[in-house]
Image 1 (spheres, helix red, strand yellow):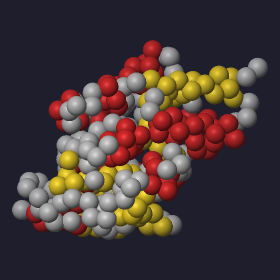
Image 2 (cartoon, rainbow, N blue to C red):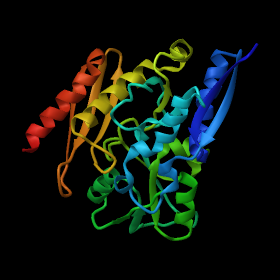
Image 3 (cartoon, rainbow, N blue to C red):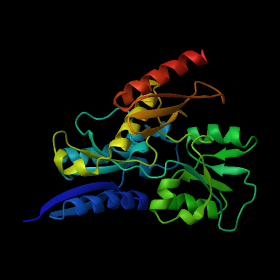
Image 4 (tube, rainbow, N blue to C red):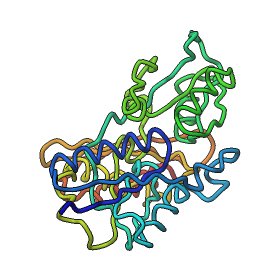
Length: 291
């Protein structure tokens, strides 16, 4: 008899495509399972006329899925890690960090072309801060909505260009829309960018998810999230972090901001087993340097 696992997802095209990636790998490893996709709209998806910090932060992208887990309506939930609160839920922990996709940000231009965009759309304070240093004089307009909604706004002329996560564009089959990739040194990514997180109820499904939990991705995620958490970086903060794991070593780069348009970038290396401590130490050092 097949066992049914119900997997919750935001109902956007990207969220569903990402959840299907996880489902495909789970099915490959456990062919006896019957996997059911359960899409749902979150508060963060409904309210698009205000910035995230005005409506309650990143938790609004997970609230409904947490409630569905609590009721037993779903067994697992798949999220973009960068959209999750930095404080992990004790009741609904992250049981697996799916292998990281492209962590970079990307520039998207209208199909008609735009050689020198003067107005770039992005709802991210992190991207805005770094764009202003890369392109002095450019205007950055807040723009929210799923990827396809933003692309429609771009084509309608609301903005001249967009900055979007490369991983999301690739997972939607829209890699051809990328006009330029920003290296991680040009534009430091959000903590967890390109990583999919699988949540479950505490103590449930741990063995089932072991095979899709990527150790290097988990280590990088722990370091990045601890750095941002130590600096109390929320959805309205430009704080950013990116970690690279090589064997037993990890190098973490962090962006620290406290006011205005000035920010600092620094890095620190250590043993992978100390990923979270590394994030805390880098945050503490950068705070001292900025004084």
